[in-house]
Length: 508
Ligand SMILES: NC(=O)c1ccc[n+]([C@@H]2O[C@H](COP(=O)([O-])OP(=O)(O)OC[C@H]3O[C@@H](n4cnc5c(N)ncnc54)[C@H](OP(=O)(O)O)[C@@H]3O)[C@@H](O)[C@H]2O)c1
Image (spheres, rainbow, N blue to C red):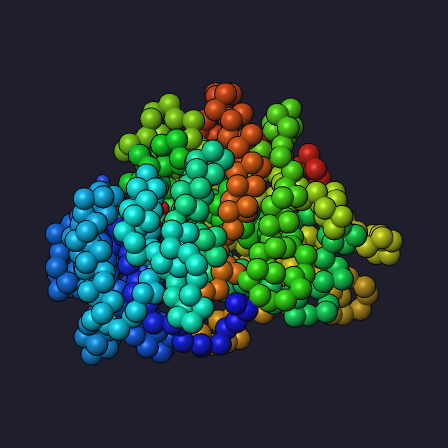
């Protein structure tokens, strides 16, 4: 399936969301499905079934979704759209609940005329993923999967599963989850979602690199000095302390291993032979396979763990991480991680990729910065000290856009240089706000386009590159935590890591 932006209507299908009483469903999934429906991008025939234990019926569930954000829906349109929305109060982790659940799913498929196509969405905490996958497998609903082969080409049918993060908490659990998924679904029916890849500016990376001739010749170790990818938040853990402080939490697992390495793979991949999903994924997988697995002796130089203490963000006092509910007062959890990665390929030899993410930081931003090498011969010697490297800054959020920073001549007599910026501002250019990543990704899954979803090899390789650091941190408690005040750019050790390499973080 080629990755495309055309408004091709997906096949008819039933959408079954496990965990439908939760935060993600009301905040993202139902609004995204409404957005698609409003633009004629849902299937002609479709139904949505929310499943969770909370006691709603269809009407109460629709009301709960609507009342979460009434401004997000037009009343007349909602009345129409919500006819597609249903709810089943059921514990989908319990095999005994499944005969009734299966009957409901089949009934709704008949009511909405969706045939046997089903898109399952696992919007649950990770400990529930495997029991639900096993129950889906045992239900007999997956007829285009491993249990009911062969595929019937005359009557193409599909059952796909979208699985939320976190995908494992270490390499072993990720492999086990992949195996459980693989017992029920083909790899081409498994959609491991990463909402970062649904973001417009992340996808723009493919267009910037592969639809233009001016960038790609420079996109290698000859011209690029290093790459920085930052995802910083100003908020702390905000009531999610017990989850964040659990063995599966922390910035390395929650952000770097999952999202930022995915973003990095789009920066580092070779040009694919086509825009078909499998061709793009083939190139992404190669990046993950080339990720250097750090040696223990290198870890103190290439990875920094941070944890925020009390401070202030935009003038508002913020309590320290260890004071949050559900957090161990002596916690060693990383609320900030900075790490240097290396992609050991011909193209990227000697070019470090610095990734960092943190909570309670000075500003909220997600950006990719490509830093270029200095000119081989310095002509403007007397001003060389002020000369900044050329940069391509891809602002994923906020201020979505792509900015190219280079040196220009200041107006007037004499040859005075200064930094100038060529600015592609996404919102000014297109006069639209970027759609939410979930709308893009749900639409892609219904169309069978896996381009923006993670392959099992990507997940497993990214764990192999991160786990040595997590093990090292586990074995070597850090006495200086908390080591940055809320509202700053992270611990001094993160700046030192860059300074050792003669570089600095872009913090503006
Ligand atoms: N929220 C976000 O913005 C966000 C963003 C990115 C990724 N995610 C991921 O999306 C998934 C869902 O997140 P969420 O924030 O919606 O989670 P959530 O609010 O905690 O709720 C998920 C669902 O789990 C069900 N549940 C809880 N305990 C259960 C149990 N013992 N047995 C069966 N069901 C149980 C709840 O329903 P009942 O209690 O009614 O059964 C609820 O519907 C997670 O994997 C999360 O990492 C969330």
